[in-house]
Length: 574
View 1 (tube, rainbow, N blue to C red):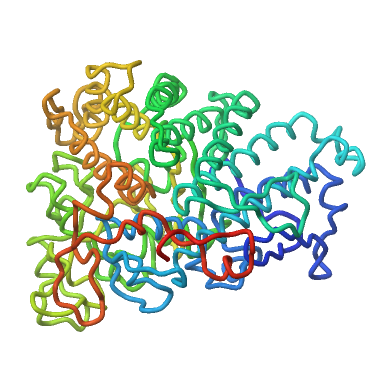
View 2 (cartoon, one colour):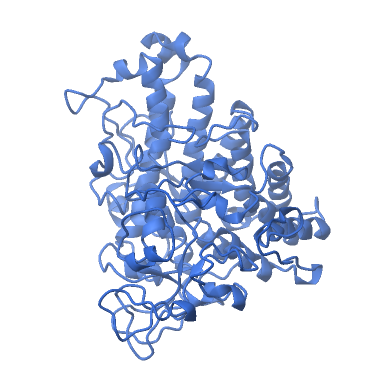
């Protein structure tokens, strides 16, 4: 499986109730291993370490059907639930089917404290935190000496422990971003203890302290093990943390954001991929741009989350006759892109051309869209009276359409195909790793930090960072190749914050940053609207988005957790 085979750890299934961290590491079956058996060998400890990564890719132990929690094993997978809380309530996605699980209320910004979907990510994050805490407890030097395994792992265990601390810090970063004041536990917290709620600022400070402490303890940036983090991942996350400091703490940290973004930019171990789409293909482990990815494949990491979901949910089976997606089965083709998002691309780049399925003839190669007049004649089976895939996500005068994507564009961005474009054997599950951190984002973060007031950079620097990203998008300058080339560079006068938020949309769409970006730019709840935002999906015929309550800048802490843990206080107005 690419360069890192992530195996399910040889530990018993974790038992966790709400956010009270309580682990049961004793065998649940006769084939399971005891704690002593796991931590007494190199292989066992390595397996427990890799479980920390695999917990972000699969539902649990036992293959596709296995699940560490008593929820839907597809919808509750970590990366799929992160996609739901970051991308689906934004100006990107309209999801049309599934009245349960809080799907309509999530995409239209109408959720409540009892809505299921925002809760999925919350619980997944705490499961991973609990796993990290337990791994750190069991791999202290004195513990490993007790197990008799210290000599076997001493060359690697410090790196593993630093990565465990990174993964835990990343979960707290996400919880801080999504839910604000949240419960806190670490490896010094006794098992079974109710988390004590910390403020958003305190969580910010914890994440900052952890990342600064482990940066030098992690693998150096020139040591690349695909699927694992290294020092540059810590620098990237620090840049992201500092860029959002104004939101999280009330105090801007733009100089710090630029400092750490530049560490990523200036590191020669990574560079932008020659072609944008190479970051989203089955061999994206060869991309020089991806700092950290979550691998998945048809043979070793089957599951309904990760890129399998991103690949399948926006397409209908008939689309497989026009585009080589590399898969043999789809979902229900129930997601479409908002007209607001599609219009961020040049008009001439918006429509899908059946004779140019890779978008080579487009100016901006990031416009990997499927829809428009050229596909209007294609019909999904059983549909005779509606043109397929029009830009609008509504049927004039009719309620929200809870069916497949006959309204709205969809995408061709994710493909389980190699960059040589040779058609291979289609598989049931995706073979695409999910790129968690990309170098292109560091360029855009650096430019934004400068525009927001960082004094350790200039507007000329900011302009060069943005144009580096756009040169690659347009195959211009040093990214010149045999495909269609256009000059996408902008001028200093065009470099504004409104331009940057749109550029982030064009570059990073479906990569789990959009909601946070809109909040940082102050336009998530008010002053900027898109299809169906703030509207009801039950009979309402007005598709035009509207402002919503500012409470939606934070998700509610799941109501069951507030009732169960006396230390937790619900977010305002929920």
